[in-house]
Image 1: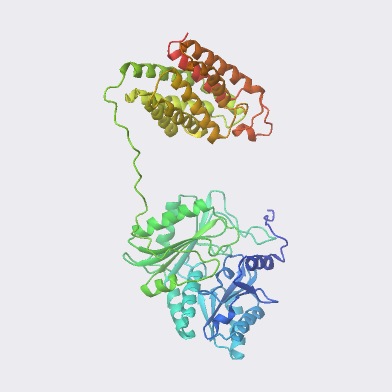
Image 2 (image 1 turned 30 degrees about the vertical axis):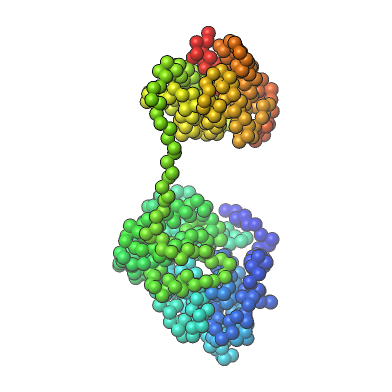
Length: 576
């Protein structure tokens, strides 16, 4: 298996480059010279207060350096990717905050052997130097129902502890009080992850393998094995499995919640999940938790503790209380902490009522004869479009995705359904407006939008007039709207070529004593010639303009469809 691609300058320097990038874009942060240690720029602000230090291996960004700032961590120590930071850097960070006047130091450490050892050794060395230090080891993983001797792994719940501890420190609480509250808060947190793909350390191969139709539940943030593999399933299904597992009464690693309890929810991107998928998972999680009778006080959605590019998500649930909620809501300037609204999630109205479209009164005395004319014309158009489906699809395959005929068939079917409803208005403007709605809702694609746009604009000149001159003006108005919003012009090899050719001929309708049927015949012929001529044009708009060679040898399918429609209109009005 090949080494995964990464956008780096070098593998050995990737952590230093990443920290420099964070510092460069975060004026409130500084790096400790000679160490991979990020500190608050305003270290003088911690004098007389407890300093909070955390850290671990890199690759979990924005954890932990992104949570450095007033109201959260005082500093973060970064190790190599997925490797605990060296003892010397941890000690250097402790010395830096002690020198700044910190009234004690709390180390917040994820429960991994390397982190416990290195932070623990640094703690002992700092105490020997006279610094008052405590270490809170966080284990929030709910994967194993009977935790092993090493205990529960520390994962995304650690970020919530950063927030709780940061608020306490900012309020001037003493070290032992913060340590006690943090320890109690950590016992109220549970996290479980699911992955669709592995991750890979820079310069290395993926840490594990998953089949294309598999997902893994309960894995660690370094790619450690989970508790089960399953076939791919829906977001709702996998979220239910996760939350049921996290709250299982027989599990020693459960989040101890019951119906009526208040919780804080974190939906965390493990690195490579799309924002679209993450939001779908969030919706599933909110509905699942509320379905269990839980009151979601706060919810956060984003990337909080990742595993490089792993395509997956973790859910963190924290049993809340009034005091913990106040600490969670406390102000922070840490660059990676999201702006979480200080209002409950559960109980909020999540929709606005749609403003109803203004409806025009029904025609008191519809013009039955005119409706019959409209019906006949529409039926002729439908018959024409249905017969052209395969021809238009074939033309479209050369320039697009081969569905132009299918799209126009959907339009024909929708128009036939409309005809059958018996709701065709006789007023010309209402007729075009209603037809535009039918095509917009049922036709689909850019063609549906363009036809709807054309008809909507064409209806305006027909509000008070319906003679030949008004219909010529309607044609012009529709074309101008298509040019304005569609971006095409005559000569760009689009349906506009046929429309504009016909519109030029239809200007004769503005003349007194014009032979309407003869003019319509000439307009349809001109449109057909223009459609045929598009095969000699270079596509400058629409999907055809993006293909490798924009010079095509077949007519544009949209122009052909428009020419056929115009001919069908003429025939539907009695032309032969």
